[in-house]
Image (cartoon, rainbow, N blue to C red; front, top):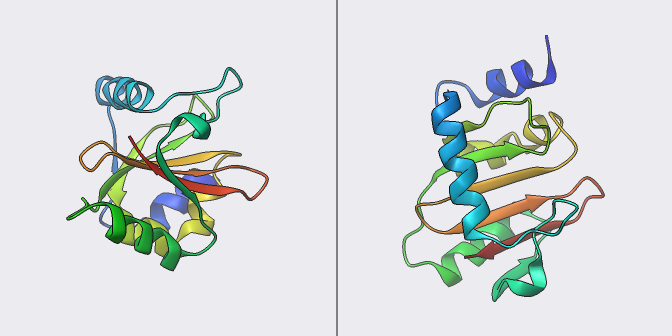
Length: 131
């Protein structure tokens, strides 16, 4: 079983693998919502509202402080271009975050509906920000 398969299994019923067309749309939305460096990280100095976080509680606290009602529907995007994008809910993804981040080096949890992203970089740095 691959790490992707293990991740999908850990997420359970509330996971959907996007079609190629939907994947491309999410990538376009993601890239137009946040500035990126040439090496593929979000340019956080150009994101007005962002924070370094290290716990799930800090992520939830940031969202509660900055968004009146945030959407729990998110997309998980990995840096490996051959991997699919999956749709799930934030609570479940955070519950099994080790399975999610094991799939590839860098991971983004993106909500186009509420305009937030969580970037989990392979060196352990985690940031959250609003578009």
